[in-house]
Image (cartoon, rainbow, N blue to C red):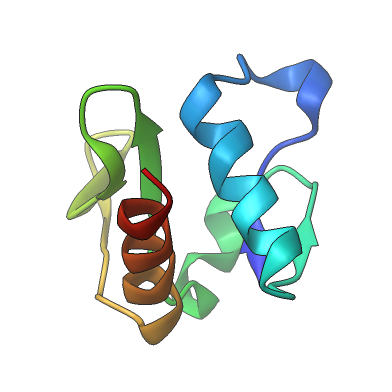
Length: 88
């Protein structure tokens, strides 16, 4: 499942719209809720979308200068990156 904040809380960009469309087309579930830092241990990976870089894995998130999350590469993230490149 791809989790992303509701549309009214984020700046929806072109690449994000492409990724969400690819999810729908490839039967990848989308959950429009704000990701919770408290759930970070259950995250498989973390990524952002960029016009210049496409689907970009986030390696590390730091919260309050004390807590870190280190992103892993997941089969879902790899699949989204591949689908995005094939769609371009």
